[in-house]
Image (cartoon, rainbow, N blue to C red; front, side, top):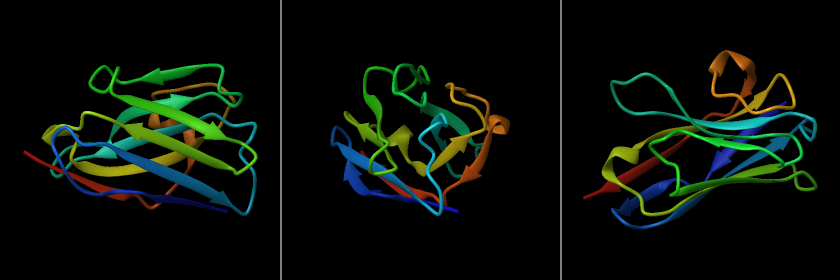
Length: 123
């Protein structure tokens, strides 16, 4: 089972990026999915989550209104659209599959993690 995150890169403040997280080895169509990030020297933090049927989403206050999480269960892929990027968004972004079907901001409620993709936002 693997979660492959991609789409990171170097952008300028105000730019947009879309991260993708593709699953292989099993489907996570019944699982909530989430994105977390870890900036250099900081702890991993919650970014966004989506329930199994996309009916519920949750965002960290720091990204609310700028980031949008979505999923395509047919493609077994989760996306994170990031707009109006700021230098403080610089981090390695990780996708994760939740133990349940609901949204959660708690990392211990996720049991499969991708390898991370680096997003660097220059000022």
